[in-house]
Each structure stands twice: as structure tokens, then as C-alpha cells.
Image (cartoon, rainbow, N blue to C red):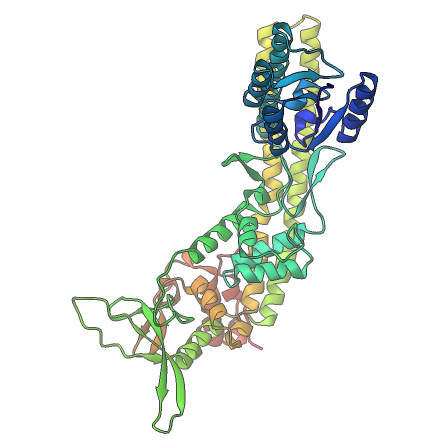
Length: 530
């Protein structure tokens, strides 16, 4: 009676099987081998799964049938059967119990003898060792890659993996969209859903082609990859890739996200738009909002929103009355209008900014040129020092000491160049953004978006807005009793400029200083009336 042979072929997608024959190649080789050896194949089992761990369903099904009815196995190599000790031990145990009659491999000798079992056990052990060592080598290589600042995986949206140079490059199309999303959310008047809609409008979707929802938007906005670092195994590393967003912008987004993510108990009255903006001038408690519905006898309903003191102080009874939202909105809009910038002021400041930018660029260029010349001189000295050392004219210790000094000086000059090139951005760009924001304040004040007004008022007045006798006022010293001029904020200077210009004749308005800064009083000294 001929033996019953089961043909088994396996191929996984793991790294260790990259050099193994494909399923089709294994089947062709095994069928040809069966013809040459006059082996009759009863059934073929094909599996596409890793053998590193036990639990392959098709392999277990074949062994279960052999355990019940007996039979033999034909495979390409022992590592196709097992790469772990459990599966390998089961195969050898079936040989010991003679339920597995024999094993045939085109590339490996094995029979059901003590020597054959020993060789098979060695082959299984070698396969397991190969998998274990390969895993360790792979992990070690990834750790080394991480130490070099190279991200060992697929890049997030906004970047691409350049297969030619094996580096990470910025995606010129999607990177500006990601930067804009960060800037929008940092303003505090956008939600994660609106950020997802913005990304979808700019053709940025999830990998499955669907719109980016809250969870994915949260991952994008909290990913340190965008400012130059990356997470690996729950640890943050410094990357070599080019950042898309500035670290300060990323930090601001995290603050907004943290503020939005604070758990809140659901209230009967949902918080209104201006909640958290004002304090009671009498008792110091916060001002809260309530939504009221009044029903007349004829059934007509009227809807109102009132703001009142929370009256949580136990040592006094606050007498402050409530105020309608319409009246409160009108007063906040008036405050915002007082810090709006007229068009002619904005045009003048932008003109001065461009002038300062040009002058600053020229001085920076001169400074950079001088330092680059010094660096070239140091490079020449380093080469001469090396030549003297190679010619044995200079002692080893002297060479090392002088080389260290020159390299240190060279690095200091390079740092100065980098610092000087970025120095003008420290105030020019913030000043430009502030001018644009101040110019749009009039539009925001006249708009009906209460939440946007709250964000602007919070930025300008902070926690210094008080409500007393249904009147809103700013309690900050720089708005009521200005201290030393150098301590004023830009918004306070703008408000002071409005007051100054309105109280003076045109002929008495002074000319501005030669240079303007974000926190100076140049606004006050130039502003004129239309």
C-alpha cells in the first residue's frame, strides 16, 4: 500500500521570508519532485501566514488529519513547516508516535530515524534562531536609525518618503494646507470638525479616501512630527526632517486643544457665548449666561439670553443686576472698535515695516558676509594645521588642542550667522500679523459672530473686563491708568493713540520715531485723523 502524502506550501509577508520561493514556485518544484520520486500526493495545503508563532489553521488541520489517519508530508524545507518550538515539537512527536510516517524535502534530507529526527530538530532550531536574530537585528537597526534622527516608518500627511534618496521630504502641495490648519486652530475659533472640512476642501483625506474626522484631526494637530520631532515607542526624538510648523505655533495649538478638551458637566443651561470673559466688579465672581424663554398668556414665546454674576461669595450678597445679551454685545463691540486700526494707519505702518525690513536685511547681509569670511579663514587654518601634523612638524597634543579651538570658533560663527538671519523675523512677522488683526477689528466688532468677538476680547483685555451696573469696563492698568510707556502693550498703545489723536489738532500730531516695534508708542506719535 502506497504512503499517503500531504503537500504543504507556505509563504508569509514577513521580512524573513523575502528570499523564499513564492507559493507557485514551491508548488511547481514539489510536484516535479513528487513525479521523480513516484510520490502520490493525496492533498495539497497552501497557507499564507507567518510561522513565527503557533496557530496556523491550515497547518493544524493537516496535522490533525495525520494524527487521526496517519500520513506523510512533502514540503520545500523544514522552515516551511515550523519557525517556532511548539509546531516543530509537534511534528517530531508525530514522528515518534509513527503517526507521521515520513517527511520529504527537495532541499533537505530527513527520515524517521534517531539521526533524521536529530537533524530535523536542528533545522527547526536553526529556523527559530534565524527568526529571533533577524527580529533583534531589525529592532537594533530601527533604534540606530532613530538615533540618527530618521523616522523609521511611513510619514504623516504633509510629507513624502523619497525612495530614491531614502529621506523624508516636504510635500509642496499638502504642507501649506497643514500649516494653515495649525494657524486656523491656534486662533481658538475653529473646531476639529471644521479643520477636517478645511482639509477635505483642499483635497486632503484619510488613507481610506474618507474625510478626516475629529480623531484624525486631533492626531494631526498633536503630532510633533510637524515641528521637527517624532514619536517612536511612546518616546519623542529629534528628527532630521524639515519642520512644517513653528514650535511656538504647535505649542499654542496644544494649549487650545487642552482647553477645549477639559471635561465639563452638562448643565441645564448651556454656557453662552460670553461666558468666562467678564468678572463682577462688585464681588469679583465670574459672569455667567442664562437662556430664558418667556411665554405670554396668549401662548407667544420670547427667547432671551441674560448675563449675571454667579454670586458664589458667601461673605456678601452681590447686588449687581443682570444684563441682556444684546446690550452686552453692543458694549463689547464698542470696546473692540476702540482698538481697531484705520486704513491709513495700517498703510503707514506697513510702509515702515517694509523699510525696516530692507534696512535690517542689508545689515544682516553685511554681518553674514563678515562671518563667512572668518569661517573661510578658519577652514584654511584647519587645513594648514592638518598639513603640519601630517608632516610631523606639530605634536599630537598641540594639534588636538588647536583643532578643538578652531572648530569651536567656527561653530560659534555659524551659530551667529543662523541667529542673525532669523533675528529680524522675531519682531517683523509678529508685527505684520498684529497690524492685519488690528485692521480687521472693526469688521469683527460689527459682525454677529459672538464667539469670535469673545476670542478677540480675551486676547486684548485678558481677564480684565469687569461688569458693573450693566456697564462693561476694562480694569487693566495699561488701559485705565497707563504706567511707564515701555510697559504698555500694543493694544493699549493703539487705544492710547486713538485718545491722543482725538484730543489734538492735526498740527500738533508729532512725527514718528525712526524705528517701530510691537510694544512702542509709535502709533500714538504718528496717527492722524481723516
